[in-house]
Length: 287
Image (cartoon, rainbow, N blue to C red):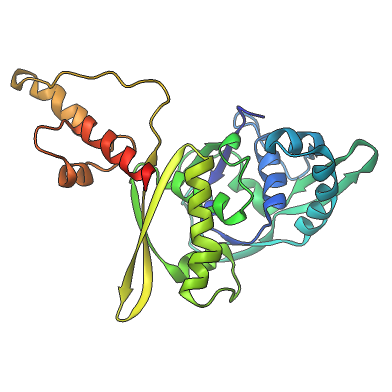
């Protein structure tokens, strides 16, 4: 499963739902089996074994086995609220549906099988645009469901390098249902844990700051990007004025996931775009 990829419609990434971390693992392990070059139907069963979960997460087989059945049973009752069409087409509408229509538990094999709900199929298959992709291994060792959700959102916004959202919107996406109404509790129980696990366990780094409306904290600004490769980065000579075209091409867009505007604002005198981006990335990791 190390190389398995997750594909989700952006509308599903931003949908409102609540799943435990074990329910997330079951769903993601099944989504990773969906072939993008083959049609997905609501009649197809996807199998996930306790051994697969144990291998994916690095946990004990006994622990995985004990949690698999109860998580699958809860998953059958879980709802999801969708607000957009799978590829951003069609009329905007709110749809309340369920993740799965069938859950089977094969006790002798230590395995569960599930069949996705009819309404979920378009959000997982035949995605041509407005979808999010990441590796299953990126979130395999996270034990916070909020961290997995936050990572998916960062992957969706990957090219932007930053995104501001209202706290109420994030509460709704995470389906907190009135939990942690005080901002200090929301930060401690949800945000700080999710950010810490994304930074420690995924290929991305993320920082956040807050904005107030009046005296109340109302919005969060996430700044994020890809962690540098473990391979050493070779020093590059500055480009000469005679190669302006190449220089513009190198400077356009985000570098290491950091937007050009941020690089320009924080670059030091004589620093190239790439050197400045790498320095900012390393500084962010040390905070």
